[in-house]
Length: 89
Image (cartoon, rainbow, N blue to C red; front, top):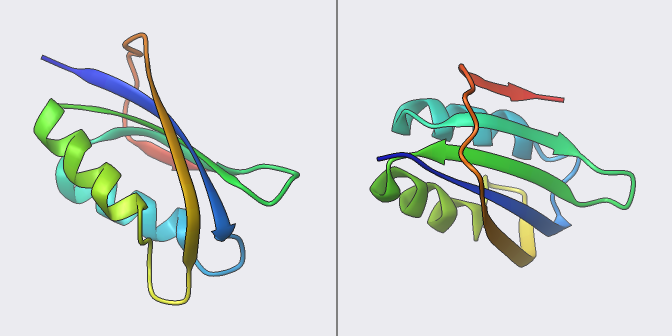
């Protein structure tokens, strides 16, 4: 079973390798999706995978990589998306 979530991450999440680190974390968990900077300073993350992998990834998103500061994480379940890989943009 595959689930997908869309998360908005705010705090100090741009300019600290958040997206690249998210891609590395997602790939290690077998998650597909994307991470992209938004004009308002947040990062949008789409993550699709097994419920267990998505839960682990969501837990990682609450702290991010070294140098990041996550002030808020807002996630919602979205319809399954057929994606390959994890892209950053």
